[in-house]
Image (cartoon, helix red, strand yellow):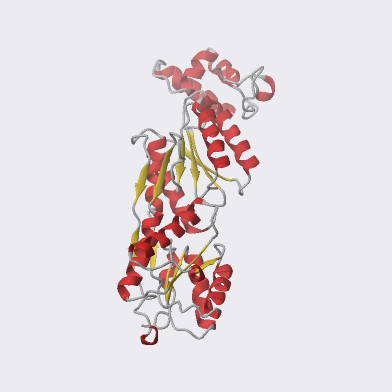
Length: 363
């Protein structure tokens, strides 16, 4: 693929290539240095087939003229740093920051850039973004976070993967399970097992009326964590009670309202497993408004281990997912540094001060 530099308007005829960077082009530099445009191109391409004296002359001319190399054009030709795209619905909270940090470390160590963009849950914006990344010859795309758990998403993401494969860019799913029937690589952590750890601890302490508060079904994270709750109850021989299952979005206020309703309905719940730490903070608020002490009257467990929850009073017992490791692993697979196969990492349980045996009156 030839350079777009030197063409009026910065485009190659018949293409949608990038605009020219700066007023000075490659031909200007070559003329100033007294070399051919091909020789100047080899200098900026890092070719070893250029004499040192010629290289120094070309670079000196570029500096004197203020020439800026068109990095996007070079990347599209397979030269220079390329982009690893980090695509997420919403960039909210430390969860995605930690995952992005892991991916960025691997990309940076291997001479690439990490590009982050949000879709806001819009399939149209998502499709446009994937098309743009394909045009720009992205190195890889990491599609991050919970997604719809329906066949329409599965078909959509499979089509993205095929389109990106045309430019040798792998699509890696991060933080969600593999797509059934497709050979897409997914890097996830065992969310069912994480919720199971919370239920196991509460049962060990003597709880039997264990409630769960989380988002409704329809997204992969909500479904996996809710399934983990029900599977853990079954494992311990505890019958599932629909009254102990309450829905609330992943916001503190929603968690508070859901737990207020749970407590007002006199369900006998002595412990609550929350889908996220945000919901758990809402549970703290609701318990205190009801005059209940944590953990003496009500045990609460969160999920995500956000940095601030250790500073709550009492510190929140929660599940720590390996977000950073998910980012690292996904980027390594995307760049061919690890085998192209799905990976399921394990979370760990973090015990703090928000759990205790149930109050004597409920035993």
